[in-house]
Amino acid sequence: MTSIRLLLVDDDPLVRAGLALMMGGAGDIEIVGEGADGDEVEALVDRTHPDVVLMDIRMPSVDGLTATERLRARADAPQVVVLTTFHADEQVLHALRAGAAGFVLKDTPPAEIVAAVRRVAAGDPVLSPAVTRQLMRHAAGTRADTRQARARERLAALNDREREVAVAVGRGLANAEIATGLFMSVATVKTHVSRILAKLGLNNRVQIALLAYDAGLLEE
Image (cartoon, rainbow, N blue to C red; front, side):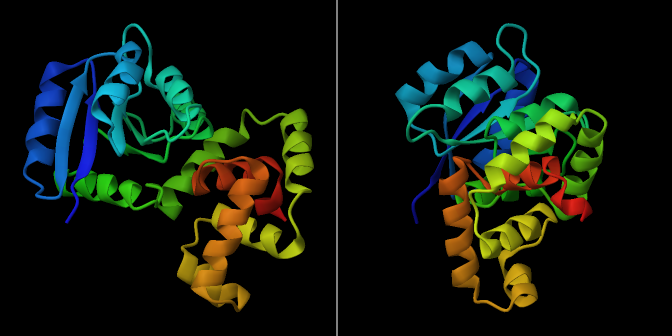
């Protein structure tokens, strides 16, 4: 089995040591590097070629949000999972919009953090429907009419079936649940999701969910 190459970025050496110890116990995860600030991330990625970056969102020089934006703008960028101490933080929303595959709380049980890294490496976002709804509610207070108009304009590129799938993704449904609800195969759902990502220039399902929410589709 090929190991998941993981880069740890956190300004707290004790947190990094704990994460390294935790991840080191998983036989399918290899710690390929550690960083203490966001300004180190791109050089570390070039040197270590990780599959996943587990990154603190609050760091003294360059924060995890900026580092995520820079990293996800690159070709063949690794997946990013942000670490936070907050359940619903505006910075987390920004990180997700920038292309992070999800987030985990620092007080999450070790087994769940390991599982999150595995899920992201496999291409699945780390956001449960409950967490997604919480973030969406947090975003509601800051959403402007102009954001809704822009989101609706972007979603106009989708056909009716793709739009239905986008709404289902926005509601936090898994592929199997979408397939059942829309009477299609799981493979067809995956194809639609891939086309939505390509048409809208998005990185992952989380960004589909946020765009659908911005457009007001989850309220209809």
